[in-house]
Length: 324
Image (cartoon, rainbow, N blue to C red; front, side, top):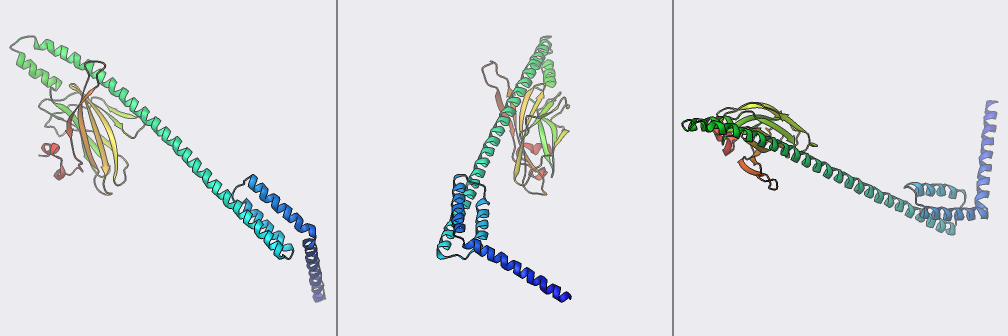
C-alpha cells in the first residue's frame, strides 16, 4: 500500500515538472518573448550608459539575462544578439570600475591637500609663538641686565683703590665672560640634561625653557634651577625620552637665561640602532639684543659638537676637559 502511494506521488511530481517545462518552452518560443527581451536589453544598456551605476550592477544584469535566455533554444541570430548584449554590459562594468578608481584618486588628492594646508598653518603658529616668547624673554633680560649694570656702576665709583676689587666682585656676580650651557648625556631610552658652565666665574639664577620642535607650540620651563661653576660636574634637572625608530632624528630648542644674558641651544637626538645608546649633538649660541628697534637680534656661536653616544671614549673635542 505504501509503495503504491509513493509511486503515485512520483508520477504527480513528474507530470508537474513536465507541465512547467512545457509552459517554459511555450513562453520561450513565443515571438513576442524574444522581442520583449531585445527591447528590455537595449533599454537597460542605454540606461546604464546614460546614468552610470556603481560597479557590480552591469554584471548583475548580465546574470539575470543569462537566466532568462535558458527558457528557449538559441539560434545563430539569438547567439549573436546575446553576445553583443553581454559585451555591452561588460564594457559598462569596466567603465564603472574605472570611474570609481578616478573618484578615489580625486578624493585622496583632496584629503592630502587639506592635510598639508593644516600642517603649514600649525607650523606657522608654532614659529610665531616661539618668536614672541623669545622676544619677551630678551626684553625682560635687557631690563634686568641694565639694572645690574647701574647698581654695580655705583659700586665701582666708590673709590679708585677698590676698583680692582669691584671689578672682581662684578665678575663674580654677573658671570662676566663665563656662560652656562646644557650638557646632554644620552642612554638607551632617554637623555639627561645637566646644567654646566664654562669660564672662571660662577653662573647663578639660571632658567631654562625647553620646546619640542615637533610639538604644537608647547614648552616646559624650569625657573632658577641653580648655580654652576666650570669645575662642577653639573646639576641634572630634566630628562628627555623621545620615541624614536632606527635612523630617526628629533630636535629640541633650549633657551637658557642667566644674570649675564640669554643663550639659545639647539639639541638634536637620534637613534642609530635598536639596543644602542641614543646619540646627541648641540649648537650653543649667545643672543645679543639690538641697540636699535629696526636692527635684528645677533647670534654668536659659542660651541658646536659632533654626534655623541654617552661613551667617555667617544667624547667630542669640546667635551674632553669635562671627563678628565
